Image (cartoon, rainbow, N blue to C red; front, top):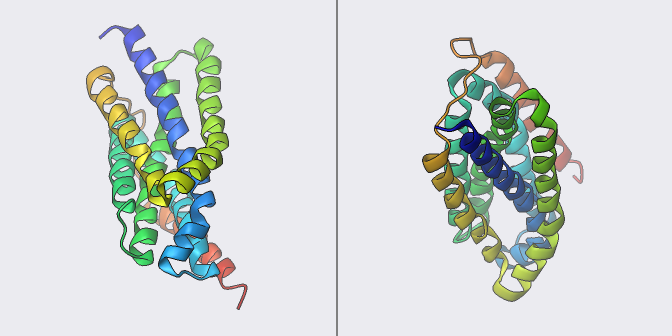
Length: 220
């Protein structure tokens, strides 16, 4: 396939995904009062709606980035888009607070797969002299998602209910999957055959979980 097509496809896919994950992280904050009212959630439990997503993303970001280097960045990225999109769809019909928070963890896991590989795909697809421009475009999309999240999240919550926020990533996610399957044919695995540090990854994840859980107990 023409290298120009691969580069343009990689940039479009990375830019869309760079918007998607921060948008979901920032938009949900506006909907917290509506979620807490529907499920009768206290302040501490309600705080886990955004925290569970961010914590899962932070826990798995580094390990999954390493796994992507070993087994293929596009493969892990594609799995992440599928997980993120489907979990968003299921959150939109969540029947309880426990299901909602559990699915937010799954969504954060998918977000880590996306965020840990999108930049790496760009640096793999573009030569050094072009990376500054494309990374700037991707970062701009990230901050656009962060900025528009509260605005669109508030509008959707007010007009259609908080569940509509989680329906926004679904068509965008399937669009990204379509673009990957049709346009992005290359794979990058620069650390193929190397070992994965299981013990270090478990210690890293356990430390983050323990720290955040401890903070949640501070009020008591």
